[in-house]
Picture 1: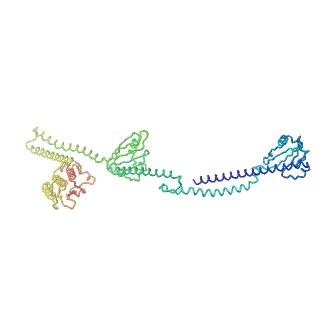
Picture 2: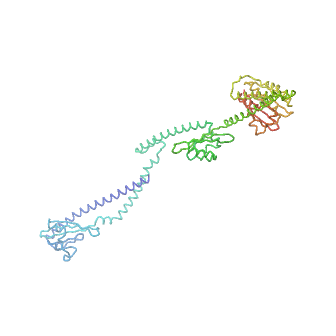
Picture 3: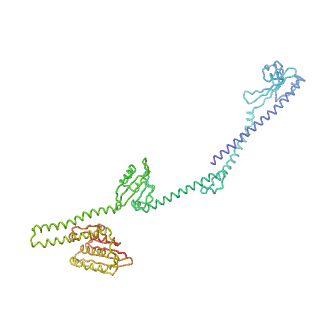
Length: 550
């Protein structure tokens, strides 16, 4: 802008200077012409008077360096000429000024030289004797005047241009300085040109509109961030090129990334071909989904296209953790299969023994053995049904009566009731600790104690031991059942609380049981709000600790 102002001022100054020079020269030239015309007329009048009185003698006595005098007869013959011999000169009857003088008493004309640098003025007057006296003067044209003054004119122009450039530069800087010092952050506080007031007012209004829009945008962004940050599902927004626009904390955890991935290609976060293919399918068809596994958990990814039908603006990935649902479906299938198997086995034994007894193929001395088998299998079937009913009640969350229970007294009763089974197995069973009162469903607490002690006896070694410990602290009661049995391998410890799960099925068939004992312990602990910890090493025993909150 400074350069434009500088050029404009300089050009204007140069134009004004040139115009002034042209006007001055034109005025001076016209003034000199008028003065010369007056002198020309006076000289002609004086010369005419002299010729009238003295004739040719007067003309010969004149000194005419700046002008030329010609005396012409009425027929155009040159009688006298101050510059040339009359005999050598042609007839002047055709001259314009001579013809006018013969007709009207005076005449004048002017003619340029061949180079247009000189102009000759002619003025003639009619004398009393019928002759014509003509006076001519040669004058330089305005071009000759300009060429003659070219050097001083150029000097003046150069000086004027330099001075104009200096003044234009200073003036341009002074004009632009207030503009450069404008505080556009506070438009209305500027002390600038009045002509800028509408512009600054408009800028202030636009600032207010932009601030309002930014505040609204930030508010919506904060609301969106708050909602997505509290989502348990992962949410990723992509543009049409597959670059990440937004990602919530849940998705960051699932894809093992952070907020720095925003603005990067989604392929740099996850190179799974199935996800890439699903994203392309969603962009083309509108929607797609897939299942994937991350860090031992199952996820379902729903991908939806965002934008118009004529062209997508991007895609939204919604990631659900379906591990529990998949686990529940698997458990349900396994539970159904295991229940069918566990029920079928004792029923087949009962039906087989009953058919043999009914057909009379059993000897009299073998009848008690078959009847005993029927009774034991029936008892096993009844125990299994009771365990299944108990698990169903725990799953449904049925309300059970709450009561205060002395955990140490209940542990002693459990040890006493299982002492026979422990003696038969050759295992020492004992309880120790202090009296601690726990509030909750006493029946479930008893189930936990009985199943933990029963498992510790069944999976123990002959000559081994089972120790039940009860203690308390400020937070709650602590129940510990430790045995010196066969232990649980590390790869099975996470699944021993699943229904019908057995580490060694052949050994379990020898020890009996339904395979639901630890599942009942887990369900009862969840109902009571208790926490279970398992520590076990193969061939070195198992320790199960249950924390009951007060």
